[in-house]
Length: 129
Image 1 (cartoon, rainbow, N blue to C red):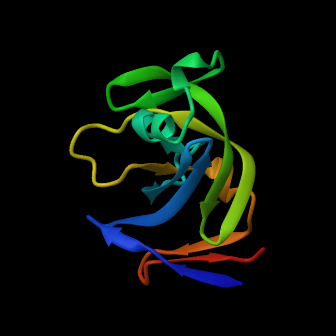
Image 2: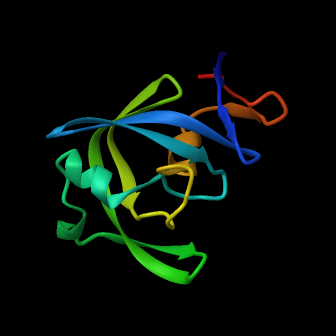
Image 3: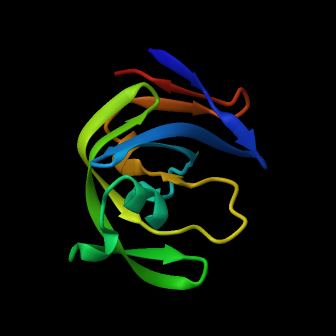
């Protein structure tokens, strides 16, 4: 088991992640969101790493505060978070509302790959594999 400290922001847990693309690596702060099916990253971060969200035909329907939207699904070269690295990882390109205190969401398509426990009182995530 490995334990990772999160950052508590407005009673929510966030973690750092890194995205590797053709144009380099970008570091992000993501909200740990067990209610999100996919990891969501901002368009501008994906573009700056060398990806083209507008150029992909694959879309996923997501629910946002303003209703349903279709977000581009992109396979990124490498994604690093909580001590794990995943190659050819699917993320969605979508910008969070202005004033959001994180860059994006760490969704279940990442978390479900591992046995994990979230301890919100202590602000930690434990990964068992």
